[in-house]
Length: 105
Image (cartoon, rainbow, N blue to C red; front, side, top):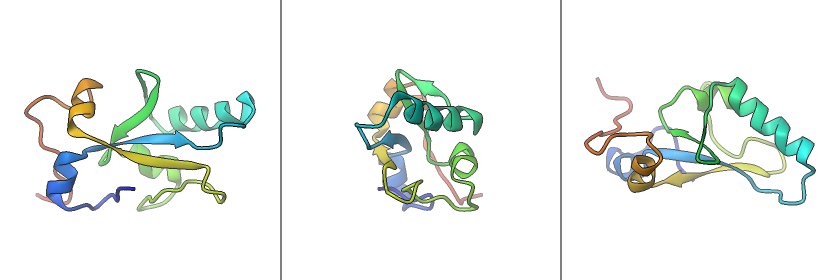
């Protein structure tokens, strides 16, 4: 899984992350709780995915930490996976010529 302060080359290749609800046997109400928490933190549902650029403040708000790191629950049933530049472009998170750079001025 990615980290918020990744190497710029890795970040350029994988500029976003997708939130994963790993437990498939959860009741719909428990899944809805996590989706509602994501939206309340400012997250968007894009083509059915809870996905955002790695430098989006939604990750800190969602995790409640200064520096977020998955997993987001004690049991490791809510996690995140890297999203490639190609997929981030397809999802409309970045333009074709965008370069996501974090920690640089």
